[in-house]
Image 1: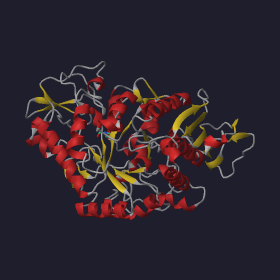
Image 2 (image 1 turned 90 degrees about the horizontal axis):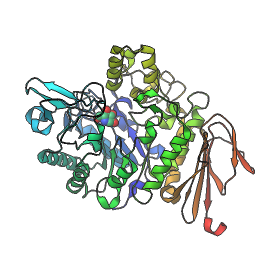
Image 3 (image 1 turned 135 degrees about the horizontal axis):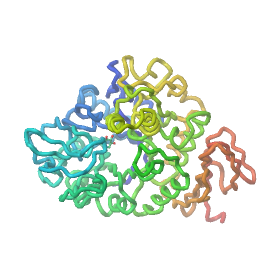
Image 4 (image 1 turned 180 degrees about the horizontal axis):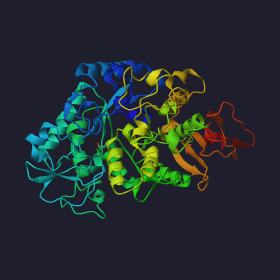
Length: 536
Ligand code: NOJ
């Protein structure tokens, strides 16, 4: 089978916030169908759909009640089939979100097959990602069940072979329907240390991140559910190192095609975790991305991402969402899209959408944010301090509705949106995409370049100007092609030497190139040199 996913760009849709077709304020499948031409225009190859399965929505669909039914707010299975057909008709592919570390507590298994879950007479000290203990007492059973996320998301017991077979069967059912792969939610947490030891200060992660049987389970899944299909798989893996990644993605190992690392997303936080804000030190980011580029070269495959439904908007995070919003959005895109790996674009990133700063906690919807707020308020932490963290890091930054145009509610819904629209929608929306300098157009060019130039997929990575705190620069080289990328992550104008080759793409309309390059605020330039051997 060809590795088509190496030249693909993936676009993530968070259905609840993408497009509402029926005015109930919640995005839906017919809404997605109405925007397929938009996605084809952007040129993306693969759509990754966050969960659309039947769910009580404790965690917006990441708590699944029925894996083979569509959430009624999103539509029906007929709508789904129509969408899949529309995606394929436009030459794109569809990747489904596979959430099998846990289900909803409303899944029929939870009452009918308790042996599919993890029960203990005594809880250990592990703390949930969504605050509080990971153990919930069940009155009927007089035992505690494990939930790494909310108490309505009980963890599945992967030690149970019958459960595993049911999951593989369900996966085949979707693949037989024609879907083109899976993004696997926290898939490196499915194997728990069966001793369930206490963690240091309640941190259980060493006992379930990349746990004892995880590779065995993934190889089994590959053999029983994946190997017969021409698909793509990507595993979401907090806490996976490059060493782990080589095992998960090495082509000889028959596990997954690629994983999502979290390392570069954790560089702007303090020791207590994501809510402890810390400015990014650019050399840390360069060093980290370099490590993934170099260590996986020829040994695995990277996913490249700045954004998803769990992360704040990158232009507000590592860029500038004020006067240099467009420039920095394009600069960040340049920096990422010329790396080796498969790039992921999260809805609205192609418009340079920004974080939102709601002033009242009542406007927030995300369970992680709300639980954290409640817990920390009870500990006496001031509202303002918590709000500052939420503004910077809360997941709802990514979940405000997609900004289609300047009409009411950004053209997302004719009703009352389930979460408020970012008030900047009159200025930032998809209606300007025809303009030559739109962020959308820039992404479109990057996506097209990846298909044309093999050096983007294959070239070896070399970091330049390692210690520089403002410039991220690197080369990519094959035997006969070279790319040189310069990105200014600051407002300070800088001079750098002019590299070989012609200017392939830049994020300012006129780039001043002489003996040196004057890099303006957030300027990004990529140079391309062919037949390098002959010239050298
Ligand atoms: C990771 C998902 O991306 C996130 O949105 C979700 O809350 C957790 N896994 C639990 O499913």
